[in-house]
Length: 125
Image (cartoon, rainbow, N blue to C red; front, top):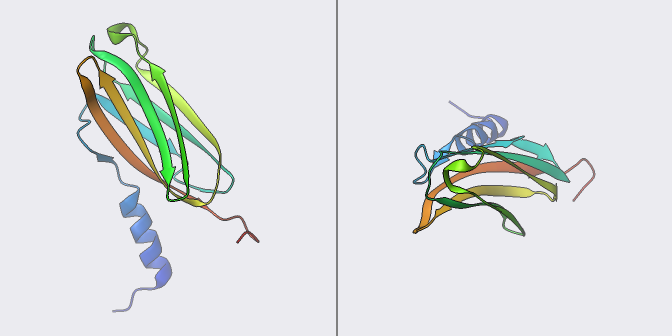
């Protein structure tokens, strides 16, 4: 049986876009959209943080082999809104690992990652 390059590409994309929590469990959930977009891209990252008196900081990082951008927001423990929305604008072509890190009073509480792909626009090299 022979698999076409296109079928292999879409299969790998589907696998790489599957959720992959690193030790986040339920303390941290994240959705990145769109999963695939043309450059220059704008990624929207929706992060849901479980309410806890220990929560102090949420950091979101978008990183490719040639580009890095991050944003962070302070969290007021259990009084904070559970949903935070981050937008990364003008991202160039590349495969991005988007990582959310929840920091508490004793250090990192949870971390979660997703993958997004920014593809070249027609005519771009």
